[in-house]
Amino acid sequence: MIRNSKLSGVLHVLLHMAELDGPATSEMLAKAMCTNPVVVRRTLGGLRDAGYVRSEKGHGGGWCIARPLTEITLLDIYRALGAPPLFAMGNRTESPGCAVEQAVNAALDESFREAEALLLTRLGEVTLAALSEDFHARVAGRHQTWDLEKAHG
Amino acid sequence: MIRNSKLSGVLHVLLHMAELDGPATSEMLAKAMCTNPVVVRRTLGGLRDAGYVRSEKGHGGGWCIARPLTEITLLDIYRALGAPPLFAMGNRTESPGCAVEQAVNAALDESFREAEALLLTRLGEVTLAALSEDFHARVAGRHQTWDLEKAHG
DNA sequence: TATCATGTAACTTCTATTATTACATAATAC
DNA sequence: GTATTATGTAATAATAGAAGTTACATGATA
Image (tube, rainbow over all chains, first blue to last red; front, side, top):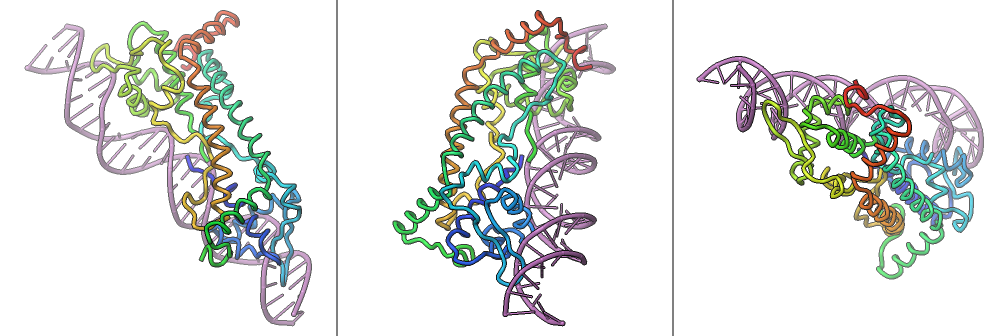
């Protein structure tokens, strides 16, 4: 049961991109995400298709936020990443013939469905602008770094 | 991101055990869970330690429910399985030095925390007795099988 | 035209879970 | 007592999915 950290990582680089004047190359972003440039391009590709970021080729190219931070929620990003499974647990069999298993699945599904609905609602209530505000408050209050290069080596 | 189905599988065999007169061997239960007897013994070991099932060695041995179904909730079973991670997503870095990442983590943690609380509450509200009742209703209403051997053979 | 950056397919590596093997331990049947 | 049956558990192998890497095409700018 590996814990996917794409959402976390993507939000991270999006906020960094928002702080930069020019575009950020996938190589720069890869350092901030501690991963490979190709992985970054693959991952951000979904966001580009959804219109949240823009990418430019060639000299001076790279990645930019394409819309105001106030108009992008965490839910938007989650969906642009392909809405990967939220839960680490699933049913053993999705369409069981066994009545016992049907009862088990029905009970689990109901609980998980409710939790998922709440989670998605909450993610939909948080904008990148709110995250950015929180970030600026942290920097101001605690004298912490925000420079992309310095913060991630 | 593999989806763990232990909880689903364990609930399944617990309800079957509840239907049987005598003890169920791990070999029988393995068939119902489509897995290996050793896996069953390992998995049910946690439930035994928590007092929800009993195991006996030798002739006529096997596994039995140790407490009334009314006194066991899905949350109890989840915990007896070691409370495995509920969510398939996690933070990229748990204690980041980068203020951007701190802001991201804080926002995600809050949403996931709320969803987790709701989910655990719901699991705590469902007893094995309720599942058993649902199962019997399904068998009565739809003329479905409940025999351990027949349903999974 | 050289350089830089993305786009993407193909392939390799990594890692965590699950399955399997092997054997010790304990209880019952004979 | 001995054979049989079942659990308990360590060690190892197989599997699957994600992530990383390589390679090269495409397109933009200096």
